[in-house]
Image 1 (spheres, rainbow, N blue to C red):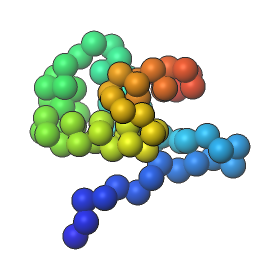
Image 2: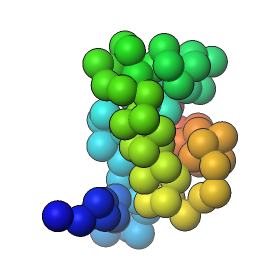
Image 3: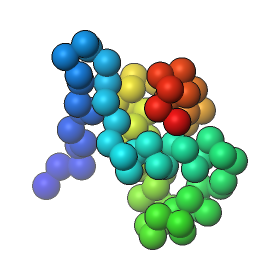
Image 4: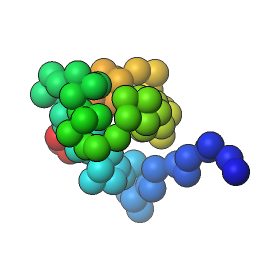
Length: 78
């Protein structure tokens, strides 16, 4: 079994589309909640949340959590 994650879907206009649960993660982090708090709110482990955030950043082609958040804000998703 592979740990690879499928890339984020791309709309016909070429923009990346994030799933609702991915946007929830970014929204909560953007609001200033810690990884531990967000993980608890979403009923997952800290490690799982960190992996999910890393996958989101990879899908978006950015290097960090803050860059993923900025990307979502600039695209008016959060």
